[in-house]
Length: 162
Image (tube, rainbow, N blue to C red; front, side):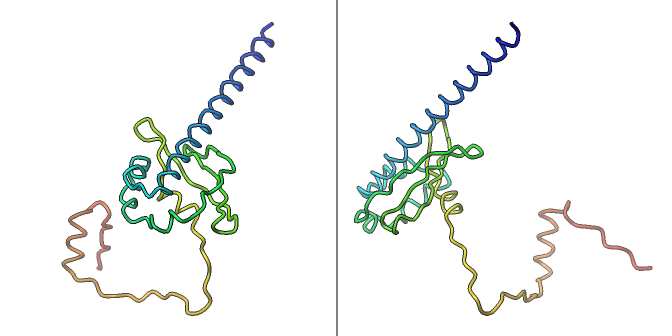
């Protein structure tokens, strides 16, 4: 009897978890659809309301005129990833290129995090040629003193010379 109760509890927990996942996916798709519609209308105020705090400043710099001429991206799926919700999309404006948008929960609502979205979608490429090199530059003693005053706990004692 105990085994049956344990199995039933496990089934109930998994069913509840699945329902929560489906709910997150629906909510994320709805917020993303609203965000995309605002972008395509060129409605900066609506876009700002749907952005995470760290992304609001970006709204003023988005190329709305260019965005308004583009086809909407196609949502391929939604996945939960370490507290973030990733909306996977295909962009017909870039030959179906697959990317993702990151949504986070702030103040009880889902918001689009353009900073995290950019970090996930950056396309790093190695350019052959000159390698970066470190060139030491003398530090002004006043800068050193100011740094020591600001963070004295990071200063290591200088070994005494005897």
